[in-house]
Length: 120
Image 1 (cartoon, one colour):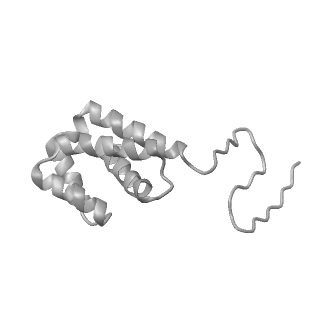
Image 2 (cartoon, rainbow, N blue to C red):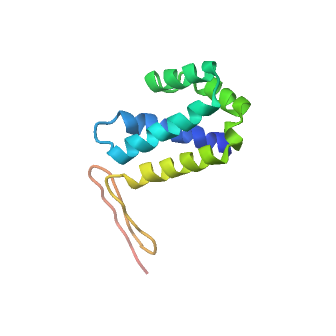
C-alpha cells in the first residue's frame, strides 16, 4: 500500500468508525490524533477538504489525496506511523476476532449458512 493510500484508508476508517456510537474512547482519541497529524501537514485549503471529508465522505477524496501528496504527508514518518497504528486499532475493535489458521471446512458469517464438506 502506498503511503498516501495508508493515510487515506486510515482517514476513511476513522470517518466510519468515528461516527458510530459504539466506537471506543481509544478509537475516537486515536482518530483525533490522526486528524491533527494530517492537519499539521495541510494548507488551509487542505484543511477545508479534510473537514468536508468528515461531513460528506468520498466527496473530496481525489483532491484530498493530491493535497496530501503536495504537502509531503506521504513522506512524514510520524504521520505514517500514526495512520498505521490507528488502522490496527480499528481492526482490533471488531465484534469478533476469529483465527482460522490451520482450519479445514470452516464457514464464517452469513444469515443462514449451509455448508457440506467431504473430507477424503
